[in-house]
Length: 590
Image 1: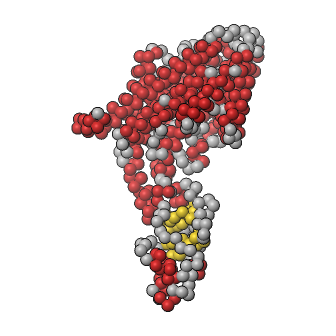
Image 2: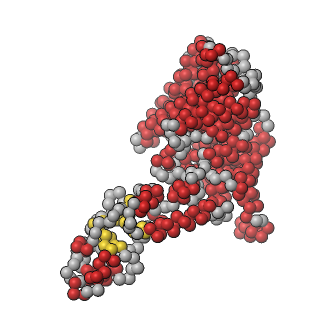
């Protein structure tokens, strides 16, 4: 049946039409997965917490998060049997090092795992798992039809953009996310499929949940020019919140990385998360109810609902202190969730922190009367969401359009842009890559909009190593060497010891004067003929380093060694540049 379908498609559809059809299917899959996940999270959370008395803390907050992480860890270990954390990072890695291949279980495993994690209180977001799910759907379709690498990248981008568009009802933000975070190049060939996927996912979500924005926001005070300085200052403030969130998360993740036992990770992550949620219930789950309270805070009283279920209930005078502590501890709750074995992303945490940060900034500004300019708290809570998202993801356009589409706050486009740009410039002075990209950037495995660097990232050192040349040993006589290399067209050969470690290199051109003199065949050994190479490549070198080493020496061929000194093979300058030119050609074709 599938063979007949492929034949029919080849006869009746052009390549562009076929890609548009696949983009539509990816958008449908991403939107359905997003709504299924949202439904599961809501139902689990409702069953567990709907009967809680809001006037005091509940001891079950100490139990639910640990149960959720434990169930997720068991599901991943015994059913999935693969790592599904850091969803967007896995997509970036698949784009740069896996030829766009994402495993099939990612089409559903992240949905189940994140539903368990977040429904039971994990302080993370559902968006990154859905982005991975959508991208996996695009990847699997591409693999099924055996599409080329560039088309695979496009379908993965369609899945990611469709997921963002579907879960937030934000088609433009979905497109911007793919361009800024996944760094898929925007060309006329890629624009239309991305838009088809975004619009398809958004329309399905509209049909499922209605056309109203995700958060109810009513603009009470329009933007005024005299608030430009405060918008810039809010952006800088959000930039520092983003920097704090990014760096503390990386540091705390390293603590979990040093633990090899699943139960040790669960004990640490579950304990930290449970204690934080007990004292600060807004950290439970995605935190969207808290955002709704602060965005609906037109009278000033609704914000006190943030204190529900906490030890601070009935003490609104401590609201700012309470929110300040939440800003400080949110990153620990998020990292503990994922580090302990849960599954979730940083979309929702960044929106949550931004909303609280913007609210706290505006409340403090109004209370202390700086410059006699008052600022509307709801507006600045909204602007803060764009600021922190732009800073954490290094994606100012995504922040602007996502918040505008999430809330219908299109009348605040100018301050949204000001805050987003100020936040991005602030964190960019300290961190050059987003929270998703920095792990890959350190290893030289990140695709960017810089085509030359992207081509180097797509190249693989292992693919251009010549491993077929005969190996020479130090006690071999010249006659034995001539016999060993006589059938090879290469000029360079490695001399290795018994353990495979390289001792030196023999260049046939350098010994050409004696190799035809048979009377010398028993006079010279390999140790007398070998020389040390000008430079050595290592298997852990990235391709930029390989290129730099060739540029700094005149050698046409360099040996490749493992970090322990074991010889692997040779790389020739000719083969290296030929591979580079071919990938650049494929990468640049429209």
